[in-house]
Amino acid sequence: MQNRTATSVANANIAFIKYWGNANDALRIPVNSSLSMNLDGLYAQTTVTWDQPADTLVLNGIEQTGKPLERVSRHLGELRARLSIQRFAAVESVNNFPAGAGIASSAAAFAALTVAAVSAAGLTVEERELTTLARLGSGSASRSVPAGFVEWHAGSSYKSSYAESFAPVNHWDIVDVIAIISEAHKATGSQDGHPTAKTSDLQAARVAGAPERLHICKKAILERDFATFADVVEHDSNLMHAVMMTSRPPLFYWLPPTLTIMQAVREWRAEGVQVCYTLDAGPNVHCLCIRKDAEQVSQALKMLSGVVDVRMAGVGGGAKIVASGKR
Ligand code: DP6
Image 1 (tube, helix red, strand yellow):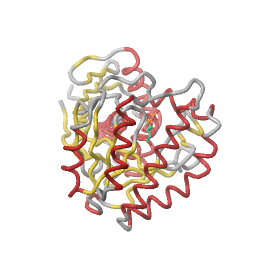
Image 2 (cartoon, protein in one colour; image 1 turned 180 degrees about the vertical axis):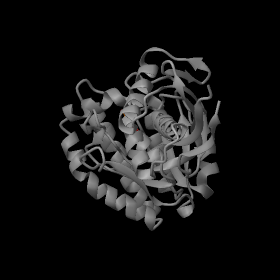
Image 3 (cartoon, helix red, strand yellow; image 1 turned 120 degrees about the vertical axis):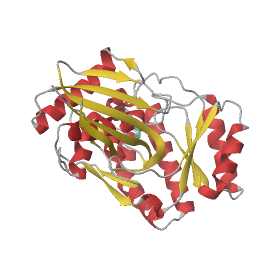
């Protein structure tokens, strides 16, 4: 028997206004809307083949059991339930960046998995619904489905929480120069971090101000106003990390070089370089800059102690199918 198969590629994304904490953990409905850009060339490529005796997962060539397989199988279960698919799937995925170190690997992974699984099932689903489906696997994955600069509307139900592009890839040539200081898998992943957000006294204040920050950030992007963009992006990242550090138990994602880089970035900006920082749930520092300054920022980061590697990514496209058929 021939089984339907499809391969999808989805880029990671970096949030400018962060998602941290859910109003509904099971449905991954966040407490605030978020903004991001996709990261060109930092991707997951995933092949899904239905009609298998059981769900299986091969990640970067290694057969997975335990938690990674359980999370993928749970997501496939959601897709089966919501799209009336009655089969199991073989999933093979590769990604080209360190997983679990603050470069949203689950975003690329669950966006690619969702898009490939739907296509391999022979279904046509609109982009908006693909974002809601991807969200069930990993919240930030909803933002890796549409292209370019993306807003995830928090919403209040399965359907009303979705992501959409608000500016195309070529709107503004921002580059994410990522200072990697550790490729180690982080101790507490985002999935286990979100439920702790509400234990911080600061979370309510962070959430209350999020709509205004999002408005300012979106406007700055649309007007290509780097100074305003830099100010609000750094502030939003600082607020999220303040919440993390004051949760119970506290989450400290920074390592000593993280702070060194953050301070250097602020000094470079004061000297006229258009650069700012943002951090996800990990120690690596995402230095956002205008393309003309990217090489200079990369060279300067490499001179700082503790930086083991630097990766660069421009604005990326949305998730897409790269192959499909039967096998
Ligand atoms: C800090 O989307 O990875 O990167 O829904 O549990 O998979 P799950 O969490 P995830 O959380 C992302 C958190 C963040 C900020 C962001 O990307 O907005």
